[in-house]
Amino acid sequence: MSRKAAKMDISEHLDAINKAFDSVRIAAFADLSVQLVLADSTKSEIGQELLDDLCIKAANVFECPALSVDNSLIDPPVEAIIMTDKGILLTLRSTEFSPNALIFECDYNINLKDILEMARNTLKKIGVE
Image 1 (cartoon, rainbow, N blue to C red):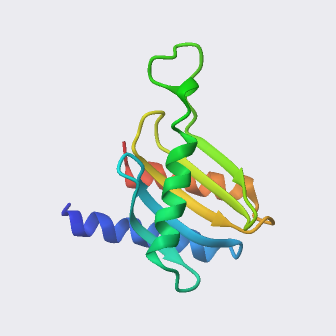
Image 2: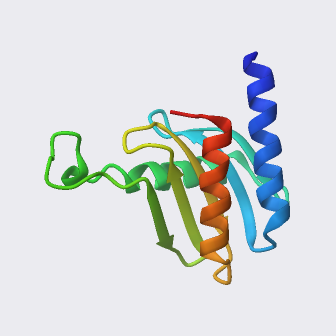
């Protein structure tokens, strides 16, 4: 599969999540290691600065020194839920140390159980590691 086809496939998945949940304002796929949004789906026009800011916040969640690779006491998280003044920032990685992640900015009334399930399934479908 070409890079372009893979990106289109990811965009289609993001669009499906955005369409399935009225409370999702932004759905994005990002490489957290370089803090770069690779694809996004939004309900309204947003600036690149907002996407960059969401990506930085999502990356910072997984940068806690206590969660470093050398710490054998606990497994690093693959999911993070952050309450902000704008709503909920939800980030999911496919594995503990994967740089690839799905990022969502949602309203407070989001059904977390359902979006987490759909997002986990999306990560499996797109096969990112």
